[in-house]
Length: 133
Image (cartoon, rainbow, N blue to C red):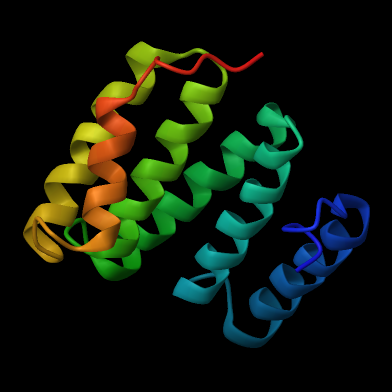
């Protein structure tokens, strides 16, 4: 809620606490821990804190791959999120193959007309059209 309202300084300690609780209660090797990494990375990306967001997105992706397998929709979402980060930084040549990988996984695991698949496809198609200022 706080992140969506732009209340980032209030959101950050809650995201960090959620991550710590999940790590403590569930252990590091749990999909919910990956979700917490992703959520904190999303907050940092929203703030333009790209160097802090990137390792968290990568950790989330690696955890999802290891725990859920390469063909899971959460892996597709992670590839998409990392691509969005790179696109935000103007790193289009790094973003494009991640969008492609995300789209391939989403089409196989969710189908071509699933809302998540459509979002990823639109992200790929619009790559570089809206440079960040």
